[in-house]
Image (cartoon, rainbow over all chains, first blue to last red; front, top):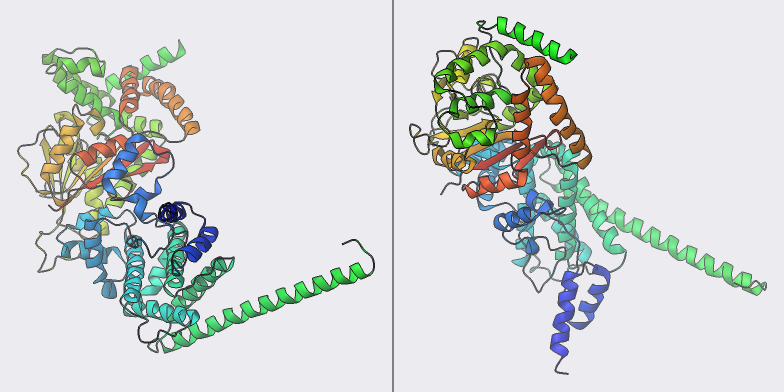
Length: 302
Length: 314
């Protein structure tokens, strides 16, 4: 019995290091706490440094350890209540200062180099210092997405759901999507340009990874704890709903009332589709077992 | 036999053109050669590294001058032949990515003055400098940005001055020339430069780290160090083709077109000796610069690479 605490700790660390969400989740659920909700593959690719994982030479390794603070922590692919969440983005302090200052100019200048330049000036840098951002205005968009995602997380931690604890997981998902969309309302008029920029071929991978990170966060914060194939389908449907609502919102002149109705309809749709699929599956299973029983009754060796 | 006679005939034609003052192009080889020739008599120990013959000090200047006047026209052709015209694209891309010039008007709260203060090191013939001034003027409508061209070799500067007559920046305060060693520039005050560029030049510096430290000193906080230089090709297959091209074709072209095999042989050897992207990034980091993102951008599969570093505020 003396070994048991050690064993438990050992199990959790293996869970943490192994990237197999489905199995490890059941373990941690049954043994330790009821709320390690989900363990998710999640990649933050904002910083080039974190991406140069292949063919890492000795020099590259030493360089990386100097520039990024703790890459192992930052690239954690799961959520955990036992460990603090990694920061939502990997920009350095100087970059964050400039980007935060630049965001204040976005309502007027949009997600452009101009906003970035003005941000650099406000932060005490020079015009030329925007060279800190190899992706220029796309870095500004990524920072917006990542920092708002971090803000959403912080809101839930500070009791976003306190008023109505009884909300179902689905209700929470809806509330979180709306909360995230509301953060976009101040830059709604600039958001179409940003979406256009995000849909450029070279920018699509990072945009999608950010969308996945958001849908993953939404489900985690809503308390979803599915451990089967629905882990994937749920994330995909939340991502699809959010992306559609994001586009819808750019044309919504009604202070987000229409958007809210839109999100509501989409959630209902996805529920209906899920129900239908479940019904079809059940029906097929029933028909299959009937066919097998019928065959056996005819003397077939099934 | 044929090639020798061709090269001889080319050389004699080049010789006849001696006195013609044609605007030279800033090329891979001329900076290096001019630099090597000019530093030779003073630093005997570096001669072996360059692998060139000794030249008497009295003849040096006239020889360099003769070389320049006689083959200036073929240098332009040589650059295009060796890189198949791609060097123009690289230079355009370099300048466009730096986006020199302030497109936004200065506000009352801004502490920095109008326009950028750009220092172009080893910028002899003004190739990069004119491009930057053109970009600032035509794209960003910034008439304040100024460029100082610095080169260790007076002949290269003379070429640049000659060429600047054709530009609208001739005799304005937006363009100036200084003759200086990039490793030690006491006449340039601390924290005075917005953008420091060195294009196909740092390869020929004796002490690259000292030049980087000097760059760090002269740059304003937030200022940018940008460097374009030949680098290492990352694809093994492409590298084979590239090495074949550079070690057999380039000296051959040099011999046929410029009548000078040794210089071009040296050119490809010095490219081979230059540190890899990661090593050079490490050197920039060591000098105190912040490295944006990955720190370098490969051009044409790594034949050349653009390195950047930003001086931190504190």
